[in-house]
Length: 398
Image (tube, rainbow, N blue to C red; front, side):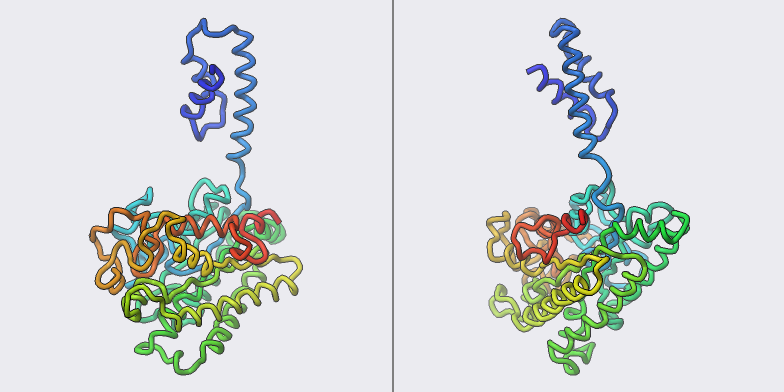
């Protein structure tokens, strides 16, 4: 009982400290005559062992750095200073996030925030627009809302940083890493241990292929040939990353865009039946992304690639909502119009109160509760189909 009291007091005295001062504080709170000096010595020894275990748990992250490439699903503020309609640096975005509205298109954490925590980082990965000095050694988030694999994707929304632009920014980061670490060999060795997360392609469908008023790609390409074009462009950027030291790649598949509140509002008669035309095209792209992972793993033996099945994880949440505590799968918690999906969340708008019961936060983006599921299953797969051939935890340990 005494030991339990001490441990409880220790844990609540300092969850983040690693010194023995909390132990002394915990012991000082107990009456002088409760136990002998010998018992106290034994308790301190046991608590030292507990502290050592806790310190190991609080040790270095599983990978020294985490580089993130993507779109609004993982943007953490890079669009805040751009002339763009694709921005989320206003309330109620960030209503459940500890730092408030940061540019994340969510009420709280994004999937990469969840993965960052699970990898063991103390802080979230800094967006490129704010990264400086030795901050970059922990990784950089290059993601930009409305960005796509194709250069023109998302142009109707204004400025954005395309996949090629994000990779160019990373090449600049690598030169800074070389300067900080002293030479290219040390930088190459360091970067080879980092995780590179790439999640693009959604906007190439949402804000390009299936937007005939602004783009002609839907008439120029079949779904299969369009996916081939995206994969070819995607491959080119992966090779640039590889040539600049990347060796551990997690390629994130695109989700079921045809099930988003925005698409349901526009194309679903009953407001619940997903647009199979869009989802089918998404699956074609994902299938080719799996093949790309296999190709790279077979032809670049010094690198490891894996595919994260965001589509399958999302579909499981929609098919089995009660398992995850969800009640609403077809509407945004915050938005305007049918399914809260015709216009995205407006500045100052009051969102729903039961946010954890909604899969979607707004017309396009999952809420924090869904992101925790997706991020957790990306990090440590729950089903064999969640990741191929590794989950992110396995990738980090390779």
